Length: 74
Picture 1 (tube, rainbow, N blue to C red):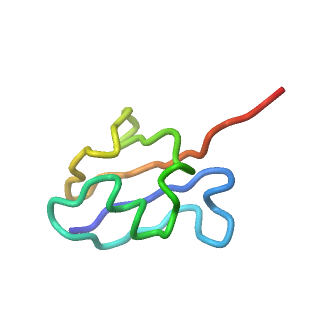
Picture 2 (picture 1 turned 60 degrees about the vertical axis):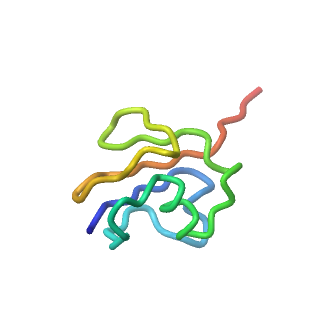
């Protein structure tokens, strides 16, 4: 199946901003993160189709997965 992956802030470094990619059926958000070689602790917020989703969410064909790193400030 095909999904759109959007990466934000530091997660884009050496990767991409938006990419359409093929993944296996029944893949979870965590599988998408792993396929991009992103350490799980670098992903703080996961959205699927603009809604908060946990890393165990099963992604559906045509979904948009947005991944955000921890946000710091001071």
